[in-house]
Image (cartoon, rainbow, N blue to C red):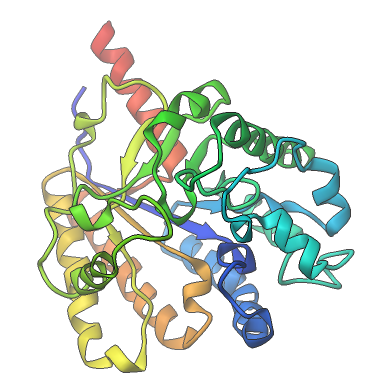
Length: 335
């Protein structure tokens, strides 16, 4: 079975404070995260208007309505990091999050999870329960499984089934794919093939981060889009490589911003014409600073998608929908 359409995929790493509790000063980021919360409905409205399906890979602790839910669903087998500052549970002991989302909207976002889940085309996925770092020294496979089971449980309590996963901090761990399969995960976002996206632990060389930043503007990395047939015949979970990180607008990079947007649009056009997959990703909180400029850029990208849909037949699929299409391709090949 050949794919007759280019595919536009978006996955978002929805984290709020859980995405960097070990390094961020919450007191300095209150407004940043409150702006992030405020623009979630704007995201959803824009995605609906532009017929864009999106996977929201969400930290499981955001599914909670207060500390009581975390205590209810947290696993007994906690991450055994050598550096316990990386553990969300150690952070909780030291910072004592609030009793409810209303009291503490930076640590909890159950209302937003429900809002996103109710919008057609939007997929709730897992970014692990406790922003679990899969390549850090000290943690073990059974602890990763326990974390994933905890997220499945709290999601099920809200009537949500998790089918897709994004590894926190892009610490892709191939050994954990079998655990994902056994726990019902059918698609996983993998990293681009470029050397500077090979992320092991928090102690990665600074040169990798520098080159990743430059690649947003200049032609450094390899081709961004890929044939869906290249994934077919593989085992679940299907690995859906990221194509491009949508780097946030910044006044420091204002003169380079046009290069960034034009590069993304050019890559999308290539994918559409060649019937390939283009997988864009970022964190919702990346728009917490300068939301007006960032939403403007996103609108331009989504309007380009609609133009490609009209002229080239490009379609938008979230990660789970893409995995379902791959499954159909494999069934046709067998028959």
